[in-house]
Structure formats: structure tokens, C-alpha cells
Length: 70
Figure 1: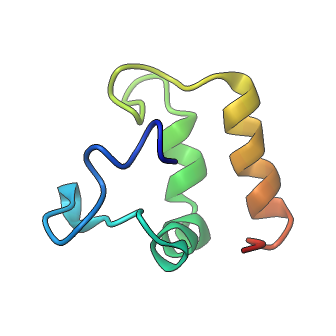
Figure 2: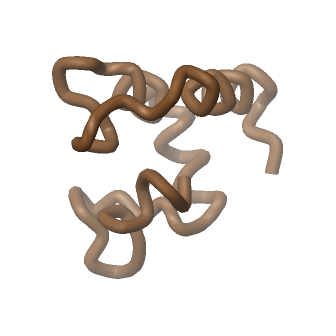
């Protein structure tokens, strides 16, 4: 998350009102399904520079599947 998301999605002025600089913010977006869908969306990827590696996307999926371990 640090390398890919926090440039835009951190602090009180986080882009799209989505603050991912803490566990609660990341878990909340994970629970909606948007974290997995946006990091796998080749048409409108997050980060906007392009999809992160398959390995990193799988880590996110594993975290979600594993129950959002802190």
C-alpha cells in the first residue's frame, strides 16, 4: 500500500476521500470489494500508472481471503 497508494490516498485531503494510511481505512475498502476490483481493473487501474505486479495483487487477495489480518 505504501508504494502504490499513499501518495494520493493518505491524510485528511486523501483523493476521493479514501484514506489508506491506516488499517481501518484499508480494511473498509477491502470489505467493499473495491480494493481487489480496482487493483485488478486493467481499464481503470489503481494505481493509475498501471496494474501492480501479479504477486502484489495476489497478496491483497490473500489478505482479503484470510479475513483481513492486521
